[in-house]
Image 1: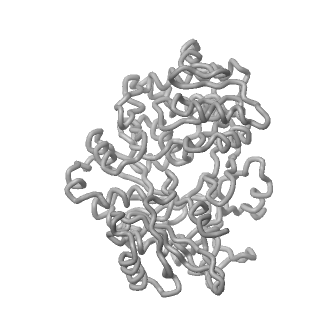
Image 2: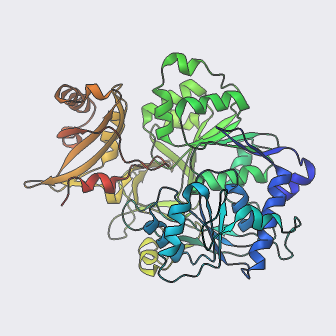
Image 3: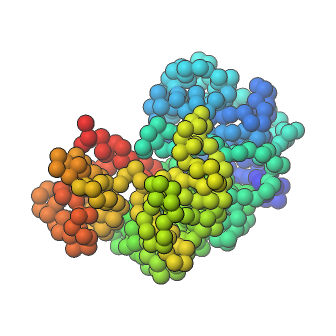
Length: 509
């Protein structure tokens, strides 16, 4: 399945609805416009396996560009729209982009990025909306002159997205490309969406930035099945509930931070929206505190599913609401690849022991232009890891404790910040929290929490004492923060991941 097949059956069905503006793109328009861009790509000599970069916010044409690249066999890279020119230039250069597509909103940064390229390979620069700067073409003018029919050598491409860079410079995650015919085979998230009951006529909500792997892949997967995708320009908790109510949303994908934001809305605001259209939702990207998961199931019903995976595709686990209530904190059992827990010497650990999570039999991948990092993530026997830490229970359910890079070693004892974060976020006066290790002359590191309070006026010694007591009530003393700092807003990525590298930099020389 793909948009062309849906356009033939239901040309006027909305393929995209923008959340704030209500702008609609039909499946006929999505099919025709992506064909036109595909022809333009071919006209400048970029064939299958070529590279295109999208540097855009959640824009009505974002998925149109992605589908054009997908249907003509390109490797396409969506770039975080919050990056600086220098950061964006690094990715454009590293991914070998021949074509760059950006928007009027990002024109200044995009222009500076292309001007800063170390070894320019870009043949075509397209700007969506507004007057293009020198060396750029108007996207609309360039595309509108092209045929609306498919290119002759149509085939499936794939995205190559970059790691968030929370522990170092971003790296492109490249999966093997085989260029099958468009629509064949249905793989990745599409069968998962079918398993959730999504079908032609369903309405799928994407509240996160499309430049991230899951929002992009799940949105395109939903469109393959004929569903309408409602795209939020940016996440807002109350606006999200309003869209579910207004558009009869049936499915959606969220991150735990979004759940927290919605749960902290006033009771009358939450009760003021009809959410009965929801059939199934999923969440991923970051561990979900047990209390948050339970509260969402109580509110939305047993329709909250969770999966654990990565852009690398090393493996996938899945857990339903019922299983989550039986095994609080688990991210489920494997549905792709087989998890195994190893110690630092590569020895397999017994059930219940904490170590690095590896998967055998998952998708093959490499880090673009970084054979050393690729080798570190794979052991030569078909196993791969992204550095998460956790353990398995007797029934094969996986539990995560944290990323290996975020582990705190205090006095020789390993401490996983996620445990304290989960306890603190459950406190009614905490809006957001990050727990890190900070320098300590005696212990090497000591545990510190940085809290964003619900009300800034609460910040101070009294709230610090209250939160420390709350931690001691629920955690062993060595796992508890020794001190708490307050911040008006924590550096959190749009995926919901805390940018701990930035948080740690405040305390480490």
